[in-house]
Image 1 (cartoon, rainbow, N blue to C red):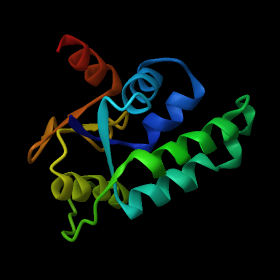
Image 2: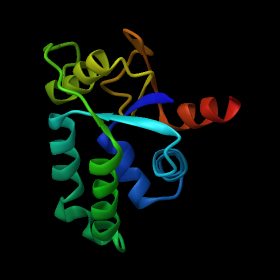
Image 3: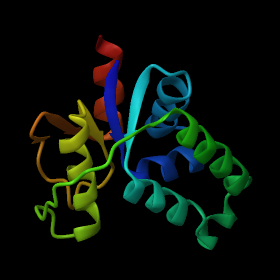
Image 4: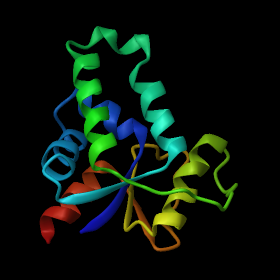
Length: 139
């Protein structure tokens, strides 16, 4: 089973619209076709971002976010990175690279093309949700 790190922005998109992030979350993560890798820091970010008041404009966002967070708590594989990395200028995003190194994730799926300007980090490929979905469906 592929080990995947899903950036917070992908979960936000999955809860707002039915596009590639939604397909990845619904058809791959919820159906347990991929192994989601998380750390305490990334989980804290998921909880903080998904509870922001600005998302109240989207119908049932918080109800769906709560259900998704419960699934993440129950199904994700937790890792405890010990190496500190400072490769990305937005220091908050370095926790994803730390997790990728610790978990030896196959993929990092992110919509953040401003900070993730590279295609690989060690053994992890960095892909947009669309790229990952298309790659996954080729196999």
